[in-house]
Image (cartoon, rainbow, N blue to C red):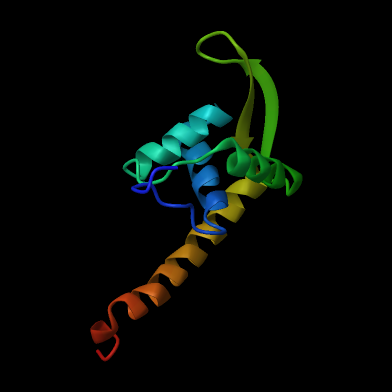
Length: 115
């Protein structure tokens, strides 16, 4: 990873994967990774060592499903889709990250806390 790329904040990958699948529909792993990088303005770089274990975890939790299909270039790929339970979890994850972002903002901008 180059130095201008940022590591994915622990626990945030689930939100990014769920949001990607909710927005774009079923995607294969490479498509998910590229979309997350694109939305981050290429500030994040995902590697297989972090994405695929996360996809497996999300699948084990019942938040996503997977099935084999053909990619755009006609290669065999596993496509992931968000489940109904995943959509509920996405709402909870988004609310939690909004709360965390507010807390961190108070530390990043302490002058605003006194108001």
